[in-house]
Image 1: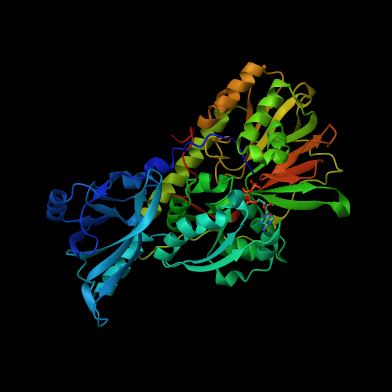
Image 2: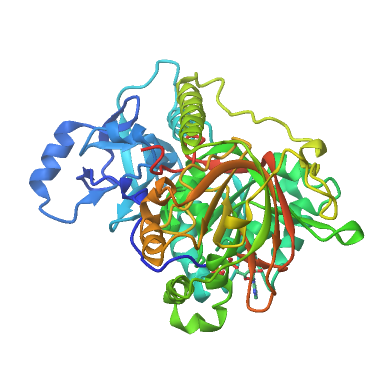
Amino acid sequence: MLYSTKMYNTGQDINISSERLLYHTMDGISASLDDLGIKIASQVVEATEAEHHGGLLSYCISPRPSLESAESKSHIPYKNILWVEPVTDDTGEVQNELEVTYAKASGKHSVKPTTLHVQISNYKPNITSTQELANYILSKAYKNHIIEPTVLVVINPHGGQGKAVKIYNSEVKPILRAAKAKITYQETNYHEHAVEIARDLDISKYDIIACCSGDGIPHEIINGFFQRPDKGVEAFNKVAISQLPCGSGNALSLSTHGSNDAALATVHMLKAMRTKLDLMAVTQGVGENATTKLSFLTQCYGIIADADIGTEHLRWLGPMRFDLGVAQRVLNRSKYPCELYVNFVTKSKQDISAHFETHHRRVSSSASNLESVSEEEDYVKLPTLTEENLQIKGPQLDESPPSSWVRIDDSIAKNINILYVGKMPYISNDVQFFPAALPNDGYMDMILTDTNTSVLETTSILMSLDKGLHVHNEKVHHAKILSYRLVPKLPGHNHYISVDGESFPFEPLQVEVLPGVLTGLLQGGNFVETCYSQ
Ligand SMILES: Nc1ncnc2c1ncn2[C@@H]1O[C@H](COP(=O)(O)OP(=O)(O)OP(=O)(O)O)[C@@H](O)[C@H]1O
């Protein structure tokens, strides 16, 4: 999947701090612990500042505001710490020093693991050995996260125009290794191989499936779980699914880890909070031919689906093919008539803002409560899923939609140019298409535009996608919904329906939310910031 060409940042990963540390990494420098991390003794910093005029060591990833308050120059926040263990001498005897491995800033938007030796002066009286001290720091570094997780890496070697394996080896693996994750490596050998991998997986072996790919592999893993005899109940309960951005479309990573950089996303994944995410059940066909697949990201009909999937033959053009495809269809006033039935939740854009604020505030405050709970009551317990949660409740496609569903007026439905429904805010690096999307509010966001809007206005709407401001344009229909049915009313030739960026049959489809099915890994239990949360 591919959306938009501009390669600047979401603004989420500029949180890498420019704070600096100045010392030789193996000196066993004096340090102390504070609430936020390891504080290097000020005299060490001063002495080494005088010594060094360049080659500074900088560090720090900062997914959430808690790091912004970290002290400058002399501080390694717990959030950056990947591993801590006692230093041993040549004979294997444990020394009074710790080896700390942490994520250090590398370039503007990335990180790499770096190691240093510290001597901590202040620690709790009940800590009686260097190993206990290391364990204590690790428990702070991985508060509400799994220490040494077992990770199944599923990698699409063709992802990211063939760069996925290289990105994994150079950026992802060093971070996973530094964090002592237990890695199982599995390449996909053909389309839908990841469905089989997830369907047949021994889930008892893994904490996380890390898809080193675009959004296609997480889509397949989720659907592989759904094909298990229990519809994936046990798998969804046990294993968190995450994406490390190695593909051309990395919406899952952008929306959850806030980064298109694979190393930074890996650190964020390791430090993220297990959080329940809603999925969407997409049904096509009737009777015995009815099939339901799960969608975690989007369904799309109209200009954007055609500009993405309908321009595959222009791959040689690179990412530009998508923008050209959209521009051509906007200028041609392309329209995509359909019948559209929607089960609305919100009636106005004010309702959406109010809903977002309430839900977002609730999640943020429960996440900060979790941060402040004692070390003993450490781990987040998620609600347990049952098969009931995966039951499809909507009518068959050959039955009438329920009377509570609104049929969209023909003045709009016959003139649609973009119908886009989503569950995650970012669909590409510079496009927050669904800025009001929430991880587990039980609703989808529907966005609709039609050709009653002028070319100029449509262009201006598309130009405001980077900041998510398009949703405030009065010509853009935006609502929180529970379910919908789309019946395309144009021939399928050269037209597409895309689900999570994958091409689906060009025929009627019905979609409903399945609340809280997927176990995902989110920073503080929320999606990254959007124009709604800022
Ligand atoms: N070994 C393989 N050979 C061919 N196709 C594969 C292979 N492994 C995975 N695929 C398919 O590649 C598609 C795209 O995967 P993914 O989203 O991970 O990558 P991407 O770089 O974002 O790709 P694209 O730009 O094609 O969307 C998926 O449909 C997946 O089934």
